[in-house]
Image (cartoon, rainbow, N blue to C red; front, side, top):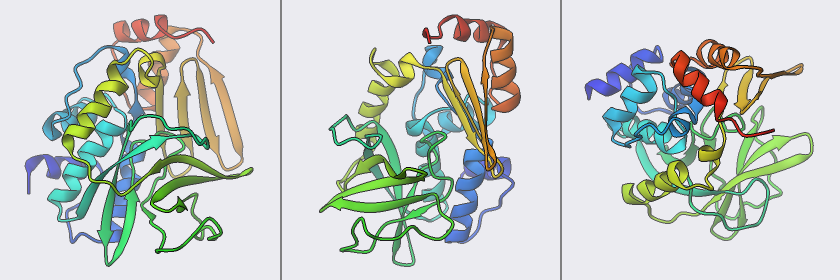
Length: 270
């Protein structure tokens, strides 16, 4: 086993084993709780290469967080090394719309015992904290939600799949994807847009999140929200010192005082 995989698993308190659904579920659950989703690297203009060893160093060792091409790139490398049957997929983030944005979200399909699961540790606070089973052929939007699950996949149109979040207002499609063949070069293109294009969301917004068993922590620019079963608490970030404290203490992100001042000073007007 690659040393980097052992390091990754130790950071999650796990040991390598047979490529089972149980182990996969634990990996995803612990990943989204331990390693923050964040755009601090984008906002600070850090170099963000996608080689697995560099992703491990950035996300696990140095605590700098990352977004889908980083988190799911690292996770994909780990899963394939552990013997999982994993395939790269790219998706379009639609937030319940019906438009055609770019392929700027990376996920994986993992096949276990003849069932394919969507694995996504890099969507942020609304994303799934566990593998999500793909529908059986011919299943449509009338399929009931899986028991005790917050996400499902439905086939909205032939060959067009939506990952949906359960909300009080009904199913909400976070992104859509197909079963096309994608490789690392496609990920590099989507990654380049996502962290370099002047209109990209992460270029223009500071975000951070962790999905814990008891709560979801989510920061977007000056607004910090902690969501629990009984409701949510919103906190407005007033200054760079408070921002640093939240990023370090609540998200486990390693930022210097100077970086905190830069991040706060560059926040967009609310």
